[in-house]
Amino acid sequence: MNYFLYQLQFNTAVHFGGSESALSLYHSEDHFRADTLFSALCHTALQLDGESGLNRLLELARKGELLLSDAMPWKEEQYYLPKPIFSPDAAPELPGEKRKLLKKLAWIPAVRFEDYCMAVKTGVLLEMEPVRFGFFSDVTKAAVPEFSDAMPYQVGLYRFHHGCGLWFLAACPDDRDSDWLSSLICALGLTGIGGKVSAGYGKYTVSDQIYLNEFFDTQTDWLYTA
Image (tube, rainbow, N blue to C red; front, top):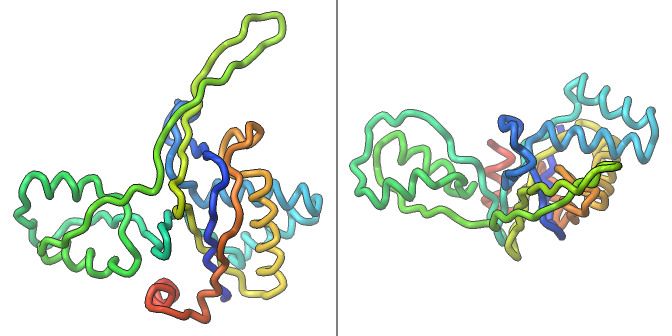
């Protein structure tokens, strides 16, 4: 299997509505899920290659020859993973301020992931503070129905700081399919991913594409092994 890491640099604000919320238009998450990515790639394949392209992508997924992860944040040279949720073997005695910081911690640097898991299991305090990758905001839009007054509504957005963005993993066993998938991912950046792309949100460029099978540092070595 060929494993690739795609690093995305967003040129616009994004809107990633939460599927568990009935008010997903009014709120945005700071990352997208694998099903959102797959749906967007299907739409891109249909636009670029017609039904044959869509069927090709669907068949790869059915045969397990296309694997995609959720998106996760990166900052500068560091990739982050979601904080694992499990019960520790020994509950650490933490002061209130430290306990609040750990509760707010959502993402763990990949290079410190094993250290964090070991600290939680043993109850040993690990110094780690939440990292901000961007900020939430909202914008007012207006729907203009025919023969009716304009109806304002709010759209939740997320804007990444400079030097931050999202990354995800993809895997294909065949080089030809991997190259084709890369072309779809790059093309998707021109139209955008997430909600309200017709308003110009969710556009990105692929700032880096790493072939993890040929890892080159501690971080990519750990990601490939994991």
